[in-house]
Structure formats: C-alpha cells, structure tokens
Image (cartoon, rainbow, N blue to C red):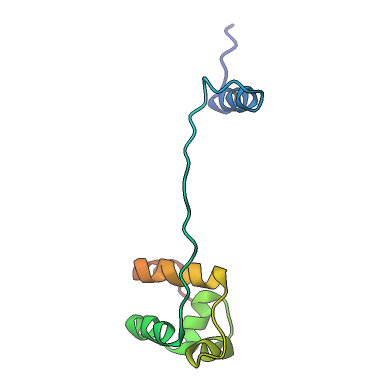
Length: 102
C-alpha cells in the first residue's frame, strides 16, 4: 500500500522545511494592511444616515453602546481602531450589515 500524504500533511512538511531555511517549496506573499481610517463626528453621522439607521441600530452593528455612538457623533470621543475598521468595511460594502443584522 502506498503511503500517500494528505494535503494537510504536505503543507505541514512544507512549513517545517520553510522554518528550517528551505524556501524552495514555499510560496510567500507580502500583504500590506493599511491602518483603519479615523472617523470624525460628521463622518460617523454621514455613515449612519447613509445606512438609514438609528444610533441604537448602528451601535448594535458595531457592538458598542448607543451612548458611545452619541459620543462619537458629538465629537466627545472617536471610534477605536477595531470599530473604525468595521465602519470602514461597512462604508466599502453596506450590504455587509446583512451578515450582522440584529
């Protein structure tokens, strides 16, 4: 019986070889991830209005409190990087909220 490696076993072998300095069997990709944009009060309001949702619903999408969204929209505070990344994704594709609708 032939001892044929599974795809997972082959991948593990290739990863081990790469870690030991053998780059001949590995394919590498360098991906640059840009920082999430900073959103100010007006931008937050515009995003929410474009979605046609209440502060409460918008807060639910982002897993933050309504009071947090209120604070963002008055300029008292700003979204952290995680919230900013989620807002960025929603701006790029508003249909993404269908995946997270509450």
